[in-house]
Image (cartoon, rainbow over the protein chains, first blue to last red):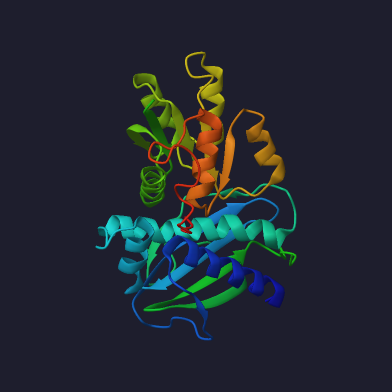
Length: 156
Length: 142
């Protein structure tokens, strides 16, 4: 895994979490592990293809989604899932051009929500290229960038 | 003039964030309409008078680029002011969209970003303050 790609992924993801959900991020060294978690995967094609996966601790979902919507009370489960998907979508759309260092457009597919493990149908041939972990007050998030084949994103 | 605004985004949470921004922005708002994709957005435009559309790019069924192309091709909607709100960062793709007469706001956006583009496109001004900086004391980013 490339240090430069991981630094770019961390900086981008931390900024998106802060700006969309108003939760201050901090770096953590360990992945979420076995605690209850959920997430979203965004497939993409362009200068290179792959998937961006965001996985967060389950307890964080109500806070994250309520903050995004500006409400005191958490929204229903459907909107909590939607919020995780939108976080993944915005991280993906912002980080890919920085890592690819090209003006070639990327096409992003609709985020796929999942509980605990990666979604059914997640392409097993994708290779993990960068992985970062973020502390978010009452929970943590893991963000992983997978690419297809031998595609090696060039660090910005 | 109260603006009827159509918000087209496949994320209900993002639509809610945009609508909250519109309500905070001090703009004269009429009816706020929502659609989860370009196809549903066009159906609304067929039956309702809309003064401004806020459109995402990456959506299922019909993406924002195709929707904007169809809006521009239809004489009844060809002049509709459109703001694209998207994560798109490709300068060439953004330039291509701007050639179709749209304004562009990058996600995540600030309320000021969106408000200034709407004012630029529609010429409306802040109802409460008569102009500038109704959001200048907030630093919320969406």
